[in-house]
Image (cartoon, rainbow, N blue to C red; front, top):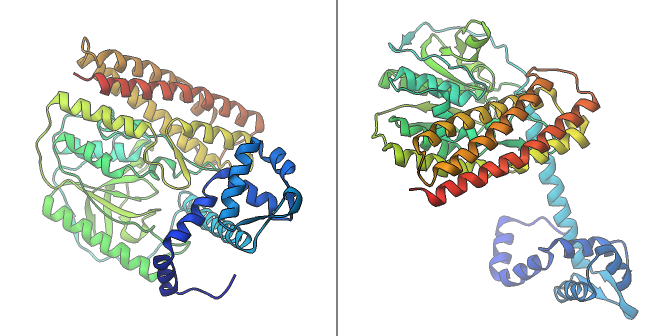
Length: 459
């Protein structure tokens, strides 16, 4: 493929030949033209054979071949035969090579995420004696979606009258469905890209939310390095300073498993916490600063100051607008599918790729999705009651009915795959689970349509 190109070589060539490069990229930026390159890569092909393989009309095929010929990627031979050129082969090889490398990197990242969600770290070390506790401690609220459970606990400790339904609804978290492509990874409920809007939605309760994060997993790899330890130490100092300055709880990611939890103080080199463990009758023992399990990032959420609360009508409208974005799948990152299409992606894995079904991932995403439907149903029911008789009232009521049905179906799914680290995955159960998910999808789509209608007619 030629010599290795330096950054300077690449930059100079692109700047000098950007029109030619753009024309070449446009030539292959079509699925049928890519298919044609793949068909002729093994040798010459006749027009009739290409016509049969692509399913195109004669005119469409001739047009696509003409663009590839004009770009020098395919050449026409005698008697209606075509073959790939050296440039065409080179471009196709580069494209496929880049794609395969990208897929391999993504697979490695996903593997590390899956492992991070499934293991813990037992680290020793000395403890430096120093302690601090805030006066008004927060308690982790019941819930599978840890952001909602932790944030609700903090807001209640700060004197806000709210519950998990309020926080899930106004933040938009109730409306998120996000699943990993090609496998059932437990990272789905937190691997979305909606965080800025979620924090903004949370601020309607009258407290600013400041997220300070480092977008690198802790630890980076399978073992904790000295660099990781230094990062964890700095994170610990950051949280300690926040506690001391605000005298308010802090929410952090990765204590002690990949979940959000509440920090109410520190003792020595450990966080004093309230986590999901209180819900399963396990003690919330202090968690050492270097025992975090934080795939994706190190993050701390600070509730720094009180801010104005919007009037209820404006707050509700913004919540529905946010719900439309969340439910529509606007925040799906690479390697994930969000919104109504997520159910088909999920069902396809269960049905067609049983070797890619991780029981923990499948059951955890199921539990979070089911809880999200319950939150969405109750949140919109409350809102529909407030807006009864107004133009937006009817579509809100329709959305409630659709989410309620989706919730019922997801409850069937959760009963089939109860949340656990391991479990049985017989083929017939996977097929039944896939069928349930496909039944959920149209209800999710109808609910989204009703929410969009409510925004359109909002009075």
